Length: 527
Image 1 (cartoon, rainbow, N blue to C red):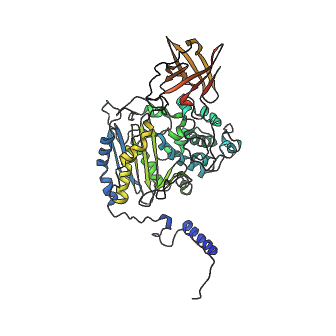
Image 2 (cartoon, one colour):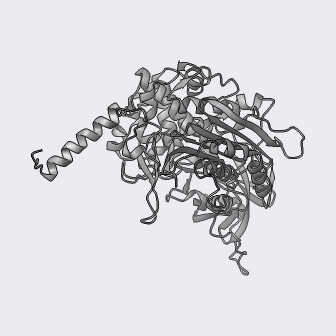
């Protein structure tokens, strides 16, 4: 054969065309795979069955080590439920047991479900991933006018808008509703657009809200119509009021010291697309089966397969590699995407309410296997560790490491009280405070709205936001007082300074609240 000389650039071009053709059109034989699809670690016959057989013991170990009150687990395989069971109790101190139909609050496991709903709407032509938010929410604004007009549904679902991490969550904590929070995002600083990843519940929610408006429905109704009802998820909802009505529901348990107590209830309607879904493992399994069958469930195409692939594939780097040996973290449109140690793509997402929920799901598309773990306790890594143990057994036939302390260490910062004065005593000789009447009155801030300082006997109290949540103010030093905020984002033991400045004829003219001052926006002026 005559030797053919091809330049390196031409060879690269030819290779690119050939590879693209292979990826788009498939290989000649069904068992051929493109290079990026290959895992060098094979799964022997019976290995997945063995992993499923270990689940009772794995769940018992997770319950014992973590001390969580309740857990439910489901595994799907090859389009069917292969395992479904509940463990523990729905509420500490009561005998009602968790089973596979117990409804849990899913927290951020809501996000991949929302990504699926948006994929349905994209497939029907109502919106696209590149639809600007302002097309359907004309009142929506960010600080940069150019970003405002260009930020899309896909940008928000992949957390690449430039909004700060968890932007708007503090507003929800003090009682603002969805529209009020979204309107105030315009005041927050922005990082570089589309090259910065920062996890934002309300940025994510703005995308879903735009999709719902385009469909001429509220979000919860849209979710029911296009996903929950078609999949027969009859106990699943994006409304907290529906969750409250479920007789078989798991109550949230916060971590108080080293025990879990049903101290708070989280009503996440304001960020429902990002964190407000409630469901059981039996019903989440239906959604997961549909994912693994490329949008098909029970012989019906619920979501177009090509459109569904988009949110489940990487759109942004969420965690850059920390070393040359480390695999990066990736994020789609509501789905986490990673590469396992066995070289397989894993699609997953955690959910967490510090006030009492820890959830996790993971699927391996190449093996047709997935697991969901729902718990009714603050996130201590139990859900993630159980799923990691199972996925190790599925892929490797053995548990690669002790996952519980690894995930526990990752979760630990959530339980560290915030505030510069945590653990610090009051000065031995504090400066004298002004008379109480000088502090009383209403103070205002464009972002947080009103706070009110009121008198309670011989002490002061602060009332925050639309919820008018009230906290006692304790004298600290002169015109500085402390209080203990408590919410989803401020755990028990947190301490915040409230510092009054510039005394005038009507009393103090301004008030700075430490825990609301992360972006320099915590100063309130007297009204």
